[in-house]
Amino acid sequence: MRIPFFSMFTRSPFDDLQKHAEKVKECAWAFQQAAECYAAVNCEVFEDHRQQVIRLEHEADDIKRGIRNHMPKNVMLPVEKFQFFRYLREQDSVVDSVQEALNWLSYRPDSGIPDALERDFFLLVDAVVDPIEELSRMVEEARVYLKTFSDKQREDVKSIIKNIRQMEHDADQVERAFFRKVMEMESDPITVIHMIKLAEIVGSIADHAENAGDMMRAMIAR
Amino acid sequence: MPMELIILALGFIVGFHMSWNIGANDVANSMAPAVGANAITLRQAIGIAGVLVIIGATFIGSHVTDTIRGGIVSPHILEDHRTAMIGAFSALLSAALWVSFATWKSMPISTTHSIVGSMVGFGLATGGVGVVNWSGFGAVAGSWVISPLFSMTIAFFMFKIIVRFVLARTDSYDTALRLSPLFIGLAVFVIVMSFLFKTPLGTAMAVGDITAMLVASVIGIAGGFGGRNLLGWFLAKKEVFRDPEMVFRTIQIGTACYVALALGANDVANAIGPLALIYSLARTGEVATQVPVPYYLLLYGGVSIAIGIAMGGARVIRTVGSGITTLTNSRGYCVTFGAATTVLLASKLGLPVSTSHAAVGGVIGVGLARGIDTVNFGIVYKIMLYWILTVPAAALTSLIIFNLIQIIL
Image (spheres, each protein chain N blue to C red):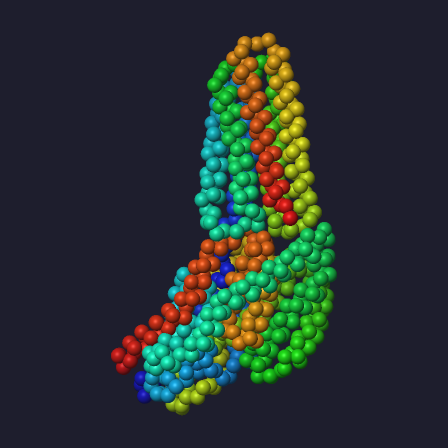
């Protein structure tokens, strides 16, 4: 076949970016289940959930590497390539942090979450899962924008980004409240360290989601 | 004389192969956007393109052909009857081989340049370096740069304008419909101008520049407003959703039809020109700078192209069609418009440009305007290498074939 411009098109990296975002979302759900399980008494499937997150992290990693490796130097994207990769990195860091949080929990397999913290812990987990769920929607809407260039669509993407930023802010509040509770708690030092570090890692999940949103904002800049 | 008959028969076969290739690749390609966008079915596309190509070749195609396309080789080399016949055949075979090779490599090269290169090879074989008009060669080389650059610029700005004034707006569908007389009108203007200046029938009418501009403007304006009404009616009937791309999709069906017609009219000469020369030599034994092309030869070329579309076109259309999500209708319109305008202007300036070259430039333009998910600029260098290689490769092959036949006979 001799087609004037067909050879100039390569597979769209946005397809894979979307797939990556979906994996991140799945990961968030598995994380939520694992966290609930960890807090519950006698839950035996925590390790299964953790393994699922590890598997999903691997898959997301493969997609990420696939995007990076299949982008010849001279390929041009509708957005700055640097920003695109930076975005991908942040989106991928979300999964890494999720995995890290579960790993951290697994170092004390049977201790559970102290009763005084349980409610705040669930609040924190939910607070970081929300912005992750927004990520895949944001990628989807951004793709529509890059196709239609519609101003309205651009506003939609911007409002999702704003949402994510707000969610991160809320998660920060929850995280701080959690810290305070930990400090007020009369407990053994190991539990305190375990809880503090846990909250830090979980909180960083939302940070990465926010960074991804900021990078998306730069990508759709006119 | 058996030798002449053999060469003539072989010429018919190679001419068929060349035409088939043009149909399966170049024409099928032009119909692909409309099919990919589900505006027409594959069967309809093949049917429409086939009919238009035959009409274009037979009725708009030239009834005389320059014995040497592009005037790049001195016609003195044709003085010896036997040499001329072998030479024309070598050129046709060599061009067909190069075109087949490029097709196999999926490289968009110009069939016209292949023929020009092959003729150079034949010229070198018989008359040496002196018979080649090297300054004409400069024009060919210039077209490798000028046509993509030019159509890149047009496509870039056209896409920017469409984004700014249509796509970005909240009521993009209504705006697209309201501005459609402009987009249709521009397309019609270029089509009418191309018809008058680019096709053999139009050139035969010998319309002056200003008259042509006036005629094209009037038809363009009329076509633009008429087109909008037709479009409004067509889209209302289909109850499609209010996507501005639908407007461009419908315009694309029109431009695709013109491309099929024009390819039939112009490119048939690439396959049938050398054949007509062989035919004329076999019949009369006389050579002039121009030889007549009988109706049935044009019809033969047109039908061969149509067979190419029918047999090989489906695959091309499907492949392009599946990738069409990357090139939506508004982008496709910019590419086609940029390419067509470039080819029109360049041929007014006497540059031997190729539509394939211009189309590549158009895609780069839309890519630079950030309209495409991914454009691989790396491949552009490779494509340009094939453009540059076309002339020497076709020339060398032609030279070798010519000498081989000389040895055999």
